[in-house]
Image (cartoon, rainbow, N blue to C red; front, side):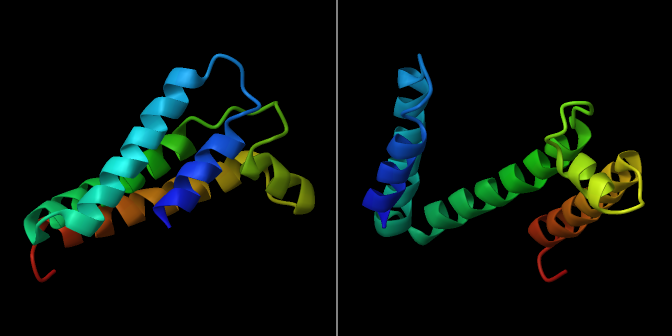
Length: 114
């Protein structure tokens, strides 16, 4: 599985120019996380899992907050083209969902048994 992840990183990144360092860092992160999953102690595995969960929760909200309108490539703009709901409303819906997920996920991660 780890080999497939590394190969997928290399295949998807081969079209970009000057991305050797980014590819190297991504491969090292994938290998490091894979090593922790396979060989790390239970405590280290838990730390990495919680770190990944926080990363995904926060990056989801940041992604929703930094949507660039006008390019035609955002999900909100595509949904606005398919429905009668404006793109800004879709963006607010995504932000509300992300804030709820961050609140709920953060509560589960910070308060044991919540």
